[in-house]
Amino acid sequence: MSEDKKTQSDETEQEAADAAAEAAVEETGADVETAPEDSDEVVQLKSELAAMRDRALRAVAEAENVRRRADKERSDTLKYAASGLAKELLPVVDNLRRAVEAVPEEHRADNEVMKNLLVGVEMTEKMLLDAFQKNHIAKIDPLDEKFNYAEHQAIQEVPGTGKPAGTVVQVLQSGYKLHDRLLRPAMVLVAKGDAAPPPDDTEKVDTSA
Image 1 (cartoon, helix red, strand yellow):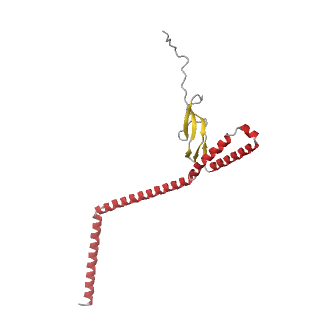
Image 2: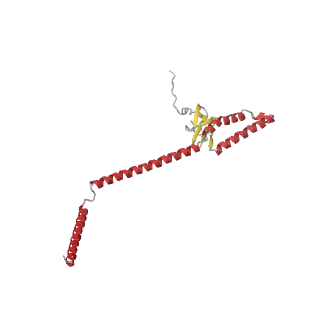
Image 3: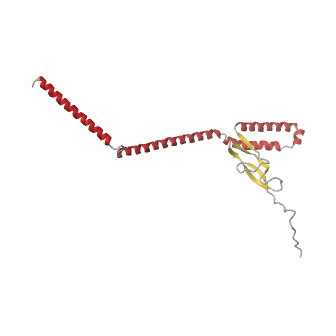
């Protein structure tokens, strides 16, 4: 075979191969274009992806809730850390006040030693109450206020006080709270609602027979 004929044969074979390749590409493209947009497999994958995304979002939200609860618990622990010590010191404050009130005023004037002793007791009480205030421990002294079930403990109702029913007329023991948490309710006496007297214009009935 001459060189020219061999070259011509090679070119013919190459052209045939190129034509076949172009036909194959066109056929593949036609298959892609005519394929359904979402096959069952694609739909399933999308569904699984959506489910995984939902689980991931739920996990993130739960983790955030756990973090917030932990932060609140830590904050509350610090905020109310002094509650135990404060409860132990409340009777001390009560006894200091009782010691001051137990001595009549005239005995202070007559006895210099007693006067100085009571001054020391009052100063100690004030220092303790100042320490309470610095640590957000507030005293509850609700005299002449409306009875509050959340902060007061009623010991007795007192009739004939001339005050509206439910008014605190005497504080037997002061209450205390730390921030918004009650340490001890105030023990109080409250006014009792007196029965209303009959009206003056009530018609009298003659019961004599």
